[in-house]
Length: 478
Ligand code: PXG
Image (cartoon, rainbow, N blue to C red; front, side, top):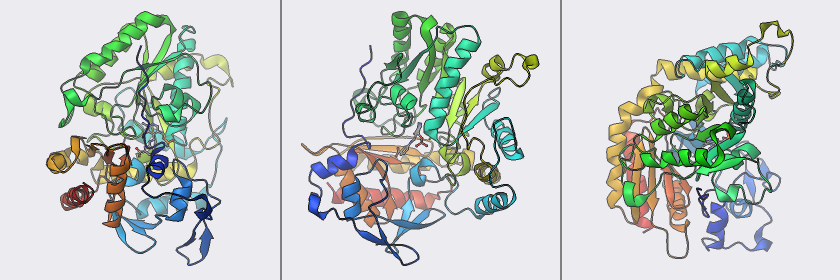
């Protein structure tokens, strides 16, 4: 059975490690937190906000504060501009400060600020769901709204189990995830997820979960341009899990088509196709977690299209409304939806006991419709494929930079893996991150892996700037 991949220096605890490893030792007495100038000039104490996935104590002594954003840039509180090579956290696909989105949200809040969607409706989620179907794989034309990627994942897992029940297969409740998978932070997501530090302190997780092995192996697929040649056979591990548990106990498999948070892992050629075939053979629902790959990141609207593999459900969030208002969603195939909707004579009986107060929030939907207008008008959902050759060429020029042990890329995503410093894993990449930030470039680091995912409006000149600033930082931090 697949062992969960232990990722001790994932971004999950990365900053704590950096602290322990002595980048900047923290004395507890120093931790009377800094105050910070706000844009308005008032001083704000930093204590009250418990920051997510952050070494709070470390950060609050020496905060990096972003106060404005426009197009491809953030502006920090000291006035220096930072080129955003991460689209925020993989979400601002159309670039920052899009006036159209701002106006749509303001208009909507003025007209209908909130409207329930439980046994009631308002027009926006119907319109937005319909718009989304234009970009989803054919037949995946029913959308459940949530407020985040984590909620989308837990929603999809619940729908999968309930669907199996609805079609008379209530013995199918097992869920299969993958080592190194990141599916958000709720109990379902961390259960199918495969990042040890996200799971280990939280007690018993969702039962009936197993994991496939991940597909990353530098011995076989280092310096891949696009999908690696090696690794399709790793999908066959699903057959072993079927043999072990019995297909009639398995509800669903969930994978990220391209794994992001764990450090950009690309699907080997043929791998997703094999997963699809095995799921089909055994009546297992296949869920693609497209929270980061959705909305143009891989050069098509969804990675399902890029890889030519149609799942049964797609989870989404982030780029859905350009990161402007918390929102997520789950697209399901017509077959799954119809399994719940078979009895028109049921009257006001609820088909699925699940939903959120803010499912289909008017402002989030208005932002989403405006984002779709921009994506479609500016061709952003396919711009990644136009820029991919240039992006790939520049990314792979870093192969000869100090300590680089892998460069991998697909669409407008790149992962650059560094050899860890002896006895101080994660430290080198964190130094590169700090150096880049000071030099005006925002990157993400996960352990010793640098992840790049700029807004899809990035120009070729800005791509050059990203890789030359990063290249310089790699030399300086050698
Ligand atoms: N699924 C996937 C595949 C994700 O990447 C989530 C679910 C959870 O989404 P929410 O909206 O609940 O955060 C994610 C989130 C990073 C990074 O730097 C990635 C995520 C979040 C924050 C940072 O790689 N992905």
